[in-house]
Image 1 (cartoon, rainbow, N blue to C red):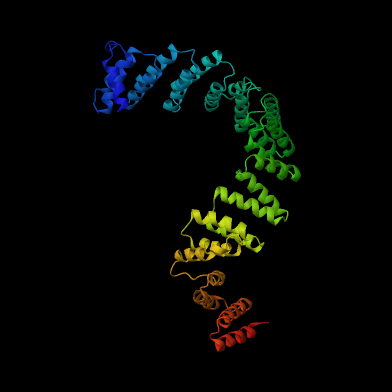
Image 2 (tube, one colour):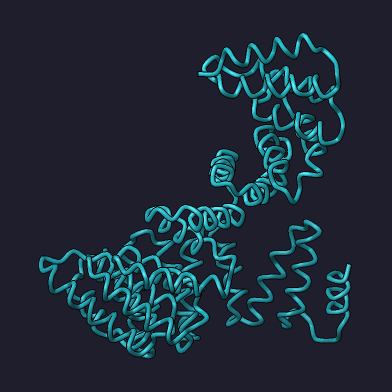
Amino acid sequence: MRFFLKISLLLTCPLGAAENARLEFAHGVLEELRGMDTAQDHFERARLADPLALPLVQRAVKQRLERDDRAGAVKLFQELATARSDELQVQLLYADFLTQEGAGDAMAVKLASGALETALKKHPASPAVIQRLYQIYQTSGRGSQAKTLLDQLDAKDAESALLYASLVRSSAEADEAAKLARLDEHYLLAMATNPQIAALARDASEHFRNTKRPEKAIELLEQHVAAAPSSLDLRTRLGVICFAAGRNEKGEAVLKAVLQIDPNDALAHQALAKFYRSHGQAEPALFHASERLKLKGGSAADFLKLADEWLAAGNPKAARVLLEKAVFDQPENWPLSQQLAIATRRDPETRAKAARIFREAELVKPPDVASSPEFLLESAEAMLAEGQSKAAEERLRAAIKAFPPDAKKETSSALRRLASIWESENRNADAAKSLRKRADSLDP
């Protein structure tokens, strides 16, 4: 509504007639919204009123291309580029238009290279111009001219250094050692001038890392971090490269410092988890792996694996916290809900509410899937804590049936637990004795 009000106000303003480009453009927009065929006439009159307006020319060029009037489209853009020859952005758009629409046409290539060569004289060392000219020269068999363009790039400028590296890497040269030396020199000079630019630091360090010189890669990232302390992504990258280079103490210290600033840096957690696991430090490895999983998410299997490791390590609280995140994200997942209930009961802080968590887990259990014996045993203990001995008995019976034949120790323990319930309640005395005899027979 507000848009139509602005259009209406513009149409009623005493600004002139067809010569007024804005008025004609407003007419065109309004009629275009109404689906009227006369909209294009207004846009064309707007362009004639202001022939140097880039958006109006671009719209007119598009219209001519839609009518297969390629020559007319080129002529319009060429006139604009000639009239605004000092404006780099216009020259770049003109050259891009010729390159895209010409699709290798000799005349289009000639016009594009001519416009870019003129622009380069007015804007020396412009990375945007050199990049386009380089591609034209390379594809049109002017390799020697393309190489001379590289020398015009300012090695002290970060954008130019990145472009130089990209073009040199993609070029085919007989002397690879000379090519590598040129890249080294450009990166080092650019970093000495612009160590604070993250894109340059990343590219330069990767160059040295990929050419098997990790110490130089580390040195460049250290320069960057010193110049830009807030660049946490590359601080993390520095720690990872330190690990890869065998500088473990340095890598650990860097990544810990990152996490002090941003505890939610998932890559730092991932790198530390991998490092600690490879060095047999189970607890910190589990901690960082869990933090990474909570931040980035993962499959149910990922959560279950780590939770099982926490439980085996005697830390049910860590397992519970991890599984609570997993169940929050996947509330209908039965294996996750089952394991969360177990961890909840084993954690002394949450044991009192375990029975409720078991009941909630049972609600999402598929009817054709059996509960694990572990779940049934833990559930029985939770029910007993609430005074529900009948429910506990039911679960113990189910657990005894669920144990495989080779789980003699576990089956024996469950039999004795069921017998103890009957004995404590003074019922099923003979059956309790029978259970204990059966348990004894399973003992080694």
